[in-house]
Length: 380
Image 1 (tube, helix red, strand yellow):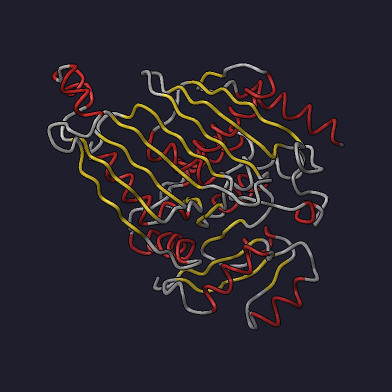
Image 2 (tube, one colour):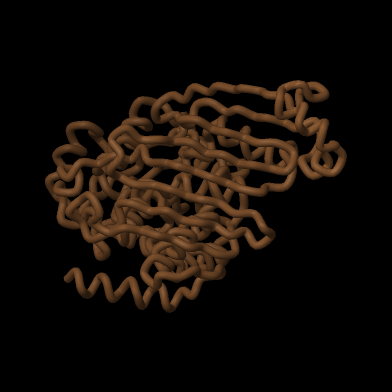
């Protein structure tokens, strides 16, 4: 196989973006095999923009057609695991859009099924993992350059959405349509990056506000505290009503600190001595001199790195990597099995806010699903 024939399920904004990437030749090891959408009006759009590419209004028929080697799910979140399992059962590779699903039990189902198909590629569209900035941050942490993590903080409020955004469709920002708000729609990439870079917490406490500044039933403002179980803590803040927006990620270690601004600039401060060593070795007079700027030289070295990203380049990289894994076994950037970590954190944040108390991980999956289904029933 020289090129993977991709079947795109859902020709909305995201599906069209991926189809255009392939049409423009931005994914050299991939071609359009087929397009599927339950909205038959999209057939005309498909024929006009992607002539000679078969169109289906039923994804199962597309899977049986012999026209595709792999699929990507550009559909509502609840459908991702179901469609992924169906594809794998037909020996077709599966790439899921984020999030992997709405609740952990359904994501665990596809993870377990994928284990029975080790010859197939199962991946997730965590495109931020291809971002050189965050790959650099992860490398610094993994190499121990700033030591053991003591605190993490991420304020990511650059998700401003006006009411008109939510009014586009009755399924948007609903419990039954999307399974939540900012935690499942806008912020999954940052939730994944936090655990990918810093590890999973042991406990989660969340204050979430539902329909706080928008006429929606789901969360549009979230503040979460993570407890990593070893004394280290973290804070995660996100919302969709800050029109000015902030994107600032800080990681404090016992040997230094990393600050990421606007996902473009990284400032790395590496201490000459670990903080505890400094604390135990400096006299009070030396400390006072340090405070006055008269201490024994600088206590840290600073490095500033700036990164540029081409729009769409990260998504294209994941598609190319997915195809490369199918063709020659290239290591996956974002294995599908990793998707459960972000869903676990989002579920824990929701559950903590619903119960008004701290939630332990591993999550009580049955309790989460019970509470979610209550909200879905009320909404209906």
